[in-house]
Amino acid sequence: MDRIEKAVDYKHSGFNCCQAVVKALADLTETDEETLNIIASGFAVGMGCMEATCGALVGATMIAGLLKDGKGSAGAARELLNKFKEYSGATICKDLKGRDTGVVLCGCDDCVRNAIRAFDEVAAK
Image 1 (cartoon, rainbow, N blue to C red):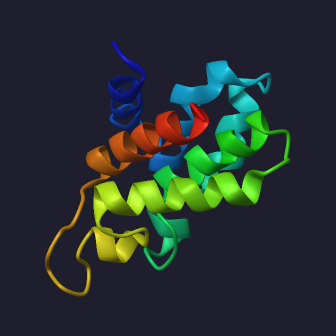
Image 2: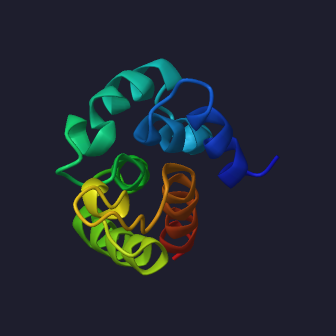
């Protein structure tokens, strides 16, 4: 199973979107999975209220920061955000889920997929 579908599988196994992405990318870091899971736990549902950035995007950004050892993390975060928005149509949870409009731009499974896709493109640079 590829990394993208592993992340979706994690999402369906009790992990939130941020945790699913972080867990799927954990092998790229030296940080243990339990610590990553705990760190990512608060980024569910757009930080608990759908008002903030999608947790899947946050998870990809966390791992990019770890891989860059903090150097150039802001630039990587900007690239990840732009790629994710291109793939998903938005970056804010409530907009992605159509909470106010009734129009779903991107469901959680696809947000998780798109975060990994964006990460793969940005991390490959």
